Image 1 (spheres, one colour):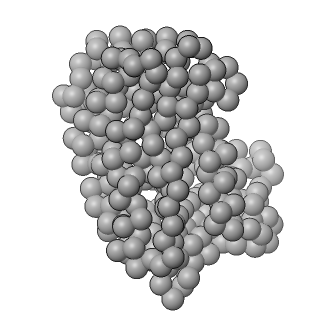
Image 2 (cartoon, rainbow, N blue to C red; image 1 turned 120 degrees about the vertical axis):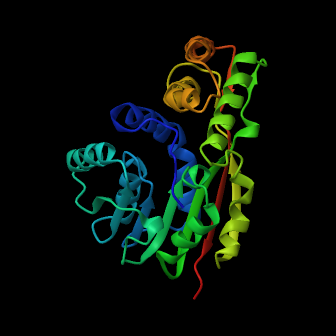
Length: 272
């Protein structure tokens, strides 16, 4: 169930996660609305990274609720603690814990993970661990990618090469960059009932405002996987640097539409 995580950790990785949290704030917020995440609930955010989603959950559940964010990147967790303190939120806690190894005794009203399963060699086993962290009839929700659907318009060789590099690096690190459509069946196989699914795909033309976050996610992701891509022999450093420059140019071009990969949201309830 371990991961040879291909994205940069620490402060550099944190800034990319902050941008992605802004780009996906509305779509993940809509998911939480659909699931009925509300005041007084106890929530678990697995693979919380810099803690952006955990903070959103803490605001939703209010002082009578509690949120635990877990990750294995100490640098990101320390930044998350400072940001929670600055936000005045005392109902969120961050821990270095490997939930997928059964490191927690608590059970939660809602268990959530975004962009976690696509990095794991055993996503089915990991899904069982997520379901096991929920109380009986608790909510389990996951979001993950299908990179085949990432696109640029007009079509771009640079973007297509970036997509190939991402998918090749993920597979070389034992991940699955097209796992999104499998999420409902993974939840069902782990014992969830009332399984549901929804698909979102943010895209943007405008290189300013909210559109900037969507478009910049592409070159920043390439820069954050560059070390892994080189280590796995998927691409050479010179190519990656030139490609990042071209993707930044596309992100700044108001005539170029860039998209996230297709994102599948799936949810269910743990067995009674």
